[in-house]
Image (cartoon, rainbow, N blue to C red):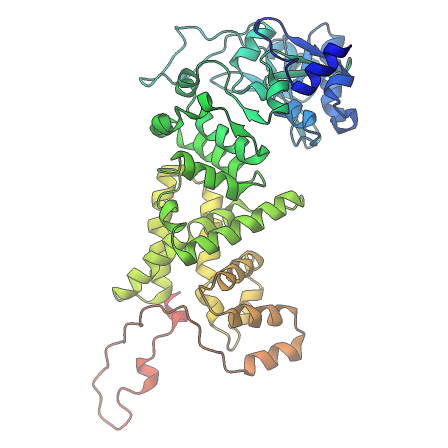
Length: 460
């Protein structure tokens, strides 16, 4: 009894050198709150167990439960094959190329069920850099644990018995708040370079320290990210940015030298006073919304991260003689073309980014019917929030944001009074508009102001 207490205090109980056998933790030892477990997850595990199969919650769900955090997603691991799993549930779909998994649906709730993976074979298809392309080898539970990326993600929880199986001293690492990769770090990163991003995300999200041997190869192996399909990199970046700790994650990315090629010039943006403040405000706002359970638009997020690249190009095009709005569209084309190649931005996200950016010069027009037309824009709220970020960062005068806030909240008379005000000049400072060529004409009114004043309405 005394030895148990000492081991618990010192966190040494979980030192397990035989990774083919699990350390079994009772409910009193792991202290998982059963109320945090999804009823649908319990339904899946119990259905599989009733059919004679093993079934456990696994991965991030168990990790979060051990940290007393309610998991967002619940993954299940079983010794049933994908076809056997599919037969047990009415709405189940087999997906995946590299490794087949089953999606089980209960209404809008999606649970991912995977078959225990076996030890990776040498003849599994790989690219020239060692990245595994396809591997549908099934195996035993201890082999599945060995295939997991980090020790804290390699534990299995059985809701029926309320026990946790720990093969790689994950509980010790959780108690020590340490992130440790399973196996030889260099080999594991080479198998799947996305793990380089995952280690950063988990360290920032959980406020864990990366173990020295896990951290050491990251900077050297960072270029392997370039060999990963852009869609996978984008998915991982989106998880990182929507983790609720986006700013900490990006700082960790830069610290480990992983930002190059993911968000080009992001390191430069973060070193510019206005750019850094703008990005920090945007990420802080995103983190706050995630923590409050509010929805976050990926389009708004990426529009914020890449705005100062678009802004720099916008000013350059205007300096070359383009009108403001066409210049902004050209700048957006340049930035989105680069990012589509690097991050495989989805068409919907890119479209939302264009809309948000294109609205910004239109906020300058505070006369006539233009403000009323803006209120009808389907992306008005996103564009307005983006405008407030620009004001808060000092990019433009705060008066513009205050005017639009009053206009949106005001009634008819208040709005008309605002329109009657003479707008204060902004400090945006774009290049001067290119004057139109005057037409030669007889009479004192030749070349009058109406003929010489370009309008952004006509260029839009």
